[in-house]
Image (cartoon, rainbow, N blue to C red; front, side):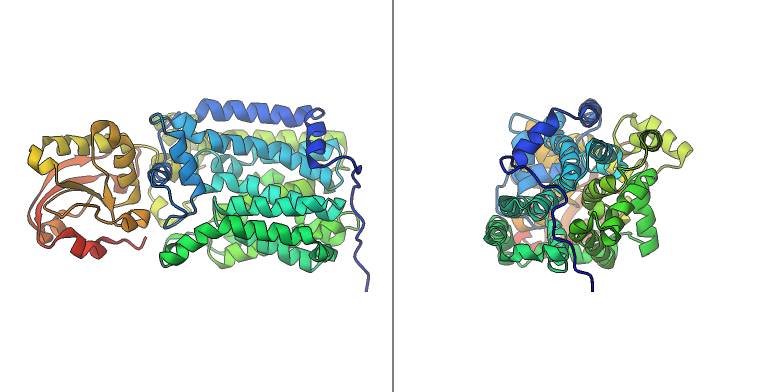
Length: 522
């Protein structure tokens, strides 16, 4: 049986660490930095073209109630979201952290390729592949947990690679720190870390198990990630309940073949040979064999997400690593062939960009989607019937809804206003009322979904309730008197966000007693 090579792919000078290498790279790669500049311009010009996304509103609302965790996510992104809005609602500032993470990913991926033994061609190939991947563009178009995953996953894998391939043991400890911080943004990195662990244990990289720096890193990841897990445990693991419902009833993953076809399209189908080379070459090539642990991590992560019926974009953060490995594998292609390949890939991305970023106004985008047939397949049940894409449709109509609710609220007599609860049917509506309603003097909304359920009915007894988007018949049964007093909706918003505003007087039982009846499992 042939023994695996344990020699580093590229030995680094002993006096230079990863910070020195990165600084040197910054000075010598014009294509990489042109990619950063072009993408920065595109993001900055489009960041505030539409309004705040449903989930972003929810993150702001959560972050204004600082905690170690929330029903369906860790605390980092909500705290960042709320911090960006300290001086008023500002869409550009809200999305700036996601833009910074997306731009930082480009040079990091280029440096990853160098760590694997690649030269300048490999570096720019990896960087450009990341910059033009439609799926990665979409992840960073709004502020959310997924926006930080590509950077976090890639940094973690890169630091492990530096330790394993170059013997930089401190990098292994830093990988643990990065994993812990990324875990506080989104729990999904746990799958990637398990994949990396399996890859390390089953290859010659297992020698790092004897390094104390590995265990320092593991301890750091646990300490950094523990507060959120403790919060989940104290509240009955609501995140697991949410994920279970989503995988069983909401996510539209399709067959494994359909999942993989979606991955090819999301990463730009002309870039498929690059990332496929990234996980195959280390399995068969002596040159890249020391990076085999990365291939195994990617294969495991792909299988785990498919098996668990995860959404297609759950796997997107793993592709920058495969682009880096694949760029080294494909570096020996001729200069003309490399240039032609990437020019064609860039051209293929151009018609998809308006589908991923808000370049076109809603009416023009609707016509564009109809004529080009580039409308993305919904990744969850709620996305079916979106007039635009689900992302863009969920950025429209929230301010109009809040204004309609504010009109109803301020039309009440003062004695009713002082005890009126505003109840929303979903977290998007509730968060829109909380974020936009501040300037109109609206009280905090209540809702039975996700974190809002844990905040409870607040101080309200149910004597006066303004319900947003509820069922008039149901409220007629549980209220002494109820009537539809308004309606809301907006062109191109999600169809189910067009509904009535109901005024309930005299809830037949006190709201705190029946709060559990309003809990939503999805």
